[in-house]
Image 1 (cartoon, helix red, strand yellow):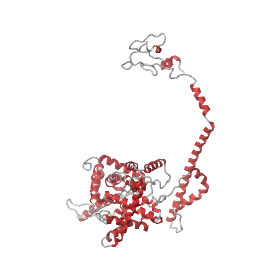
Image 2 (cartoon, rainbow, N blue to C red; image 1 turned 90 degrees about the horizontal axis):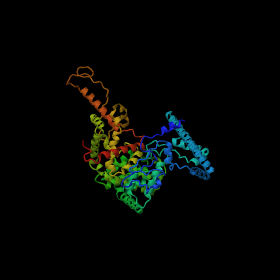
Image 3 (cartoon, rainbow, N blue to C red; image 1 turned 180 degrees about the vertical axis):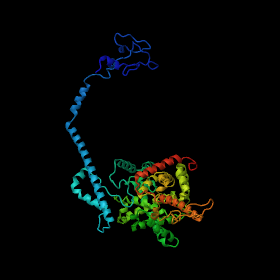
Image 4 (cartoon, one colour; image 1 turned 30 degrees about the vertical axis):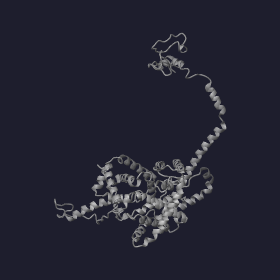
Length: 576
């Protein structure tokens, strides 16, 4: 310890202000110190201060402590507080609380261990199945879902008590076909704390007598929980009124109106004037996704009626390829209103009651009609709406990423060759169905979401692949066999024997005189250009998005919103 002199020196203050000291302030609101009025503040024996007054500086900690003794008033208050706390403190409560904390921690550890063992068993069953298939084994092998069920039932008796106390969520294996189920909930059906909170907000909003549609749009922009998505989509699309009392009567009236159309028009599908339309619909439906769902005869029958009735009632456009894809999201979402299964594509739709199927069909028709009312120019003669949007996309990309735009232009890739399908099918052929449903949550929350905001989503979607587009070495021509070299908007012939050696007029390989280009050289250059063009187009029409989920879609939508915020309010934001 330092001596007293050193300690005093340590607490020396050179400033005029010392914490805790009283400094008089004089002015209009604080008149000069009057010893007659403030005699009690003057220590005995001290002289009355004059104006202005300057207090003696406090030089040591002991003097500072004595001057501020009211702030640290020594007394028995602390002892009294401790005595009161000791009297009110219950030892049994403390022990019980501590025991609960330790018990909960142990349960969490057991839960993580159980989940890890469970996932390990699933991987073993899956690897065994793949091995048996690869070896050509003809024996019946249990599927992954069956293996999951058997393992769960085998552990049920052993872990029943633990499961009752922990309430562990049952995990399910994601479908082999890209399905509509939420990418996160398909693995962990139990809601997280954030998801449960969002679901409560939606339920409270929808429970009122008049739903605030503006507030519903704000909530829905970031995604709609699966349990309330059917009613939310019907409200956002304008199919149902905001007033709760009017909804049931509206549903009954609209459903009755739709089946009146079916009774009136559907029998004319084989007439000479309509048979071409019906034949095209019948051809296009098997091309839809997901595969397991579209192969069900009942689903095919429902889709044929919906598309044919819409085509008859909208003669300005009639049926156009691409409209068939727009029914699927509505149909899948409305089916989820009546079933509890996570994967709709594995559900047998024909097992639902006929009345329920009729309700789903009518609701899908009216919601699809509301959507198409905003983008009908996409499907009229020559499809001017799509051509205009593709041109706007080209000009927008040239501003936000000139390098990508210049690269596509150098390889003579036309935006219409790959972006036509993006506009015609609203990216449904580019991303899994679960991602499309998540996109449509936001589209229906945005003003002109399908017609205007979709443009910025396409721009963000293209720039998302800029690295792959600029690196031509990543494009593999062996993908031609997978896509059959079929290009959606234009068919470019594949020139065979690309590696053919070119010999010029002088007989030397790879040499020619200035100004004299042999036909073989021209063919070689044409083959090289066509190959680069094909590589780019094949990549842009077969983008690797099969693994995409909510996270990737949320990032895409955020980037699209940023582009809209930066460009949409500028009068000439499409022009350079």
